[in-house]
Image (cartoon, rainbow, N blue to C red; front, side, top):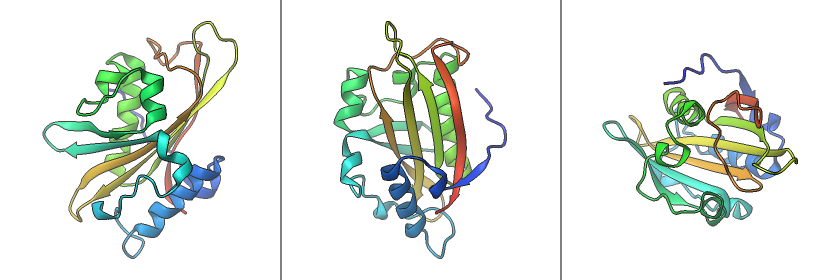
Length: 180
């Protein structure tokens, strides 16, 4: 398992993407008295319509981990399948880079705060550098996190590298978003 160590904390206003910034501000507004995670019943994957195709909703089970529950059309098209019911490892793989992505999701769950991740990548046979930006936001029932609402924005086809040091990928920033 990849250990991310302590992550820096940023505000939603530090996120460059307008739509993701708006969604993060909504998550913070849904918190009860500005504490804990919003209740599961507050989840609206389509609250920012422009993000509908980028949505990923996971069920969180303490025994069985994360499982895809809902996946937007843009995400399905870029990974060439509908992963509903599968764990994230089934899509990203169990190599070092796949472990890094899963570690980000788990870090978000443990912290009880949204996570922002920005990677730059080059798809095979493509010299153009493209961004991949993800936010993950935990929701729960008051005692524990039961759902993880994510948005994944990227361009081009996804091809997962074998190591996080693959020269076709570069981590720009990973941080917890602790305020609106």
